[in-house]
Each structure stands twice: as C-alpha cells, then as structure tokens.
Amino acid sequence: VICCKGKTLVAVASGANMDFDRLRFVSERADQRESLLSVRVPEEPGSFWKLYESIYPRNVTEFSYRYSTKNSKAAHIILSFQASSPADRKEVIDALVKKGFGVQDLHDDELAKTHIRHLAAGREVVENERVFRFEFPERPGALHFFLKKLTSGDRNKKGNFNVSLFHYRNHGADVGRVLVGIQVSHEEESQFEQFLHELDFVYKEETDNPVYKDFLQ
Image (cartoon, rainbow, N blue to C red; front, side, top):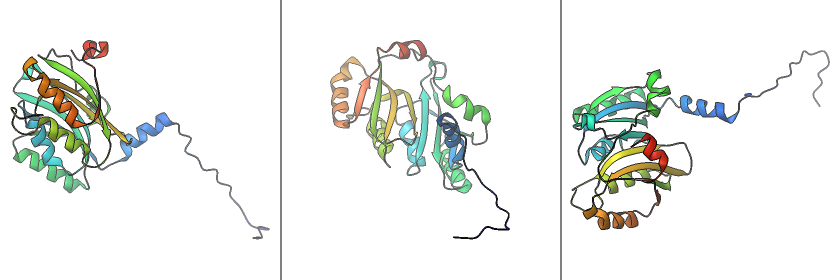
C-alpha cells in the first residue's frame, strides 16, 4: 500500500459526456483521411467505372449521383474517399483531371460537408427506371466488384446497364447498402433478371415505394 500521508492528491473523473448522436458527428468529422470531392463526368455508360478506377484501391466511403435531363451531357457526382495524406489526395485529383473530369475539392467546404452531400439527388422522371436497394458484405473490394458488374464494358454484354441514380455511404457497418436506379427496357428484362441472379447480393426493388415517387421521381 502506497502511503499518501502528507501528499496532495487530485481525483480525476474521466468521461466524454457524449451520447450516440454526438458520436455520429464526431466519427463523421474526426477522420481527416476522408476527402470529399465533386466530380463532373460525361453522362454516358462506363463513366462511373472510369471514375472509380481512378480512385481504386483507395477506400471509397461515399458516392452520390442522380441523372438530370437539365444537363444530359454531364453527370455531377459527390464522392468521398480515404486518402493516406494530402499528397495522396492531390494524386487522385490530378489523375481525375488528367482523364478529363471536372473536379472540385470539397475537403474544407462546410456547405458541402454539412448539407449538399445529403441533397445531391433530385426529382427526375427517367424512362424505364427501376430502383433497387442492394446489400453486400462490407469488405475491401466489395463496392469495386459491384460497380464492375453493373457499369463496366460494352452495353450489349450481360450485366452492363445505364445507371440513373446511385447512393452509397460507408458507415463502418458490416453490411454495405446501395440505392441504385437502373434503366431497364422491356427487351432487357430477362437479361437484367439474370444479372440480379448472378450478382448474388441481397436486394429489394423499391420502384413502387411512395417515398421514391415523392422525392426522386
């Protein structure tokens, strides 16, 4: 037993006095590796894949896009990824610019980080659009596999469909959740059903969901 007689002692009560709602804010802002970008790409099949390939194998933590008839030649995407350093972030931005993409670094933009990232979608009536929620194990390469299956390569090959809506956010859970709008013509329905079967992810169609119709259509 340590003798404390004649010594001055200080009692320390340690605690963050923080609930889970506050922790959500802290986790959102504490990771300085996360870099938020606005990227303008050609509105054409395959652009998603070219964009993602410029960032991979870095971890993409957010990806938000909605097709717009008001600007049918360019797609505006908000995305975030984990950069190992400011130099690494610059390397990615330079690579995107080199490929002809328009890039805006939103890393220090409070309007974008607090509000715009949550409002990137909009209402749009898209021909032959079907909307699905997909779930897959949140592990390295899972989003890469999903996007490759969905958007890469020749439109005439199995499993390459035009994406009209895409929303993904990594929350650190064990399951990744993606909301996707896909244009599927009547002639492509059997091909699309085969694509869903081969993808082997949990999914639910939300095309008839009233919330989708009220806010996204």
